[in-house]
Image (cartoon, rainbow, N blue to C red):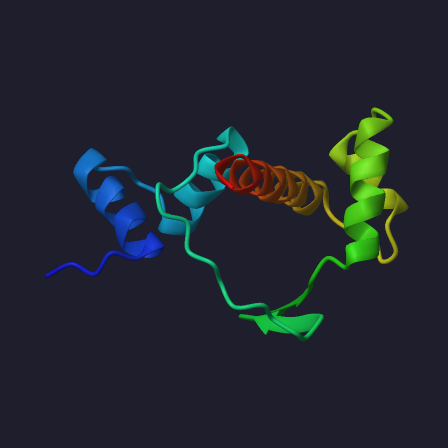
Length: 116
């Protein structure tokens, strides 16, 4: 039996289409195109701002950074320009992914309001 999890569905898509990519790569492409799972899973909130992944260190986006990213994007700045203005600076792909994630959160909130 296959457990219905986000990663499993992505892996099944990769296998069925014989794609030479990882599940995380497919997830990134879906995120960039606004593709949403029919049943999004709410992940637990991580309380720590800094964490390790492999040999690298990741810093979560703060609410202040989220506000700044959205404001700068509305002013017409691109992800690379926005990333250079953040402290500490962020890579353009991080900003691009965060903008897509914030847009997804806003869309979900609108759908929840409309359903109520």
